[in-house]
Length: 400
Image (cartoon, helix red, strand yellow):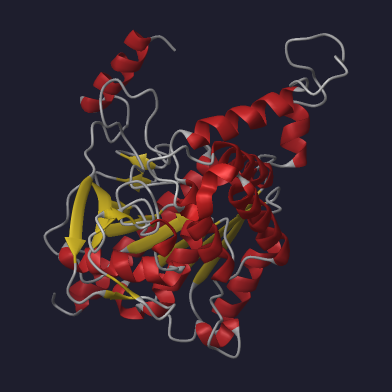
């Protein structure tokens, strides 16, 4: 796409003509008292969180939605930072005026997780006690810690009860955690392409990625800031992870065994197949925008997550939940398969919690939740509208 076309798209979005959130700005908020008590037994202070807000709060502050991002995401969920941006936020297909997360009806908040590298406190942040990046001295954080930090942010914004929490993949795990941890603080949960815990196969792929990073000489035990970064290790980790986001059917249709820039085998170790070229591109582009230590910390946090931890069962873990649920899976997702979504649904139903389940048939694998999908869009839009109507009817009956 030519530069003038990109500018035209962004300018049109700014004027509201392309159903886009338009030009948005990342904000930051920090807290230090009390420190954030972490599940590992340590504490973190000060804590900075980068976040973006779309839309306006209603007079009753009853239209706020918190969206959690996935592993490699950030606070920039929709719109553009500048007119020159080549592409919008990571879930622009779902967030914006007239879209399922309609910013003309709702105010949408998305924050970068702690442990990340896109503005929130993480391993690459400066440790105020040393004046140097935390690196490997950064405390181990869990998804629950990330959720607690975002609860502080929501409180700071003056929102007592969210209309919804939502996320896909890791973001879906955090949405589930919020519903259990803060049952009085959310009316609904949209858990998309996610699970109550990562299965052994998922943990195995995460470990291969971590080992690739730690085996890179440039990692230097995690203390590589100001030096050469572990580019090869991080690129390989991304390549491995990206394979899990796709489906065999999609790879066959998109790449098959087709060669890249040649008509016959070269009988060497150069890039020959199109799928090789694609994975190398994904790995190399990821290195330019992500921190290797953050990748280690976040994947470990995903592996640790188990919603039933500390309870006898998943049913027991969900018994205090007060929100209603929309649980969505994708037929070709083998990283977070439909069976794991159904496990969540059964546990919710066992507690009498209003639950809608949808399996979306498609061939795009785990990443399907990031792509345009009419069935997903209609389900999310209808679910949120119904929840908002019930919330407001309940408030009217109480005379609020």
